[in-house]
Length: 319
Image (cartoon, rainbow, N blue to C red; front, side, top):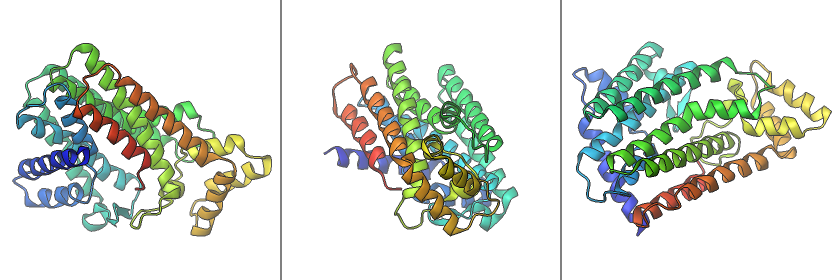
């Protein structure tokens, strides 16, 4: 039943995405549709809808229109990321930059940011507008911090978490908080969902970083973080645990300017040998458990069950 209800919500979100993406410039629509309809999970707008319905099950169409602003924000970051990272693929297809070039890709990303802010402004709610603009600033800072810390093999776990909070968790937290506001939640309930989203987002990104090494899904651009010099939690943990010889070799591999496939496999084996994947998985699970704990005291209905279902789904995802 829960899966069927989630499918219904996803269909309404998909419909809203198609209905409200309309630029007077056909090229913008073409690039936007390419990134938006490339198989995304719609986790962000889905969380907004569910968090609202947790308190007000009979909400209006405005909720779905509002929820998709988070998908626009997310898609904008993906377009910008692909340019910054010189990505070849995104979701199993050629990255937009490889089809239309860097300049056009960045400009369409800017359009999607602006589209999201316009949708937020139409709500005429200063609190929501403040959350959206503050979140956009935080996300931009996260991208810059990540760029500045490429190949920084002494990156601490605390600083890594600061980066992934800004890059990923802040937006997921905002989705949940805005949903709570739209549903008429109390300040205490709103704060609970804000924290729930933060923990869920931290876990989501850690698992994403694990899948960059371990995913078995076809179409996944495996080893992208390694090739781009991104130091993620599995690497941080492995470097802490490793013997002097293993640490030295892993550092050499991480600092290669143009790593080949066999070097990625060697690095992966060293990370696994030194428990980097296992410890990162445990950290992600600890955040999932914290996320679930924050839901205590909230209304007991199908929408709370849906939130719990989503946390488990994100923990066990393969792509």
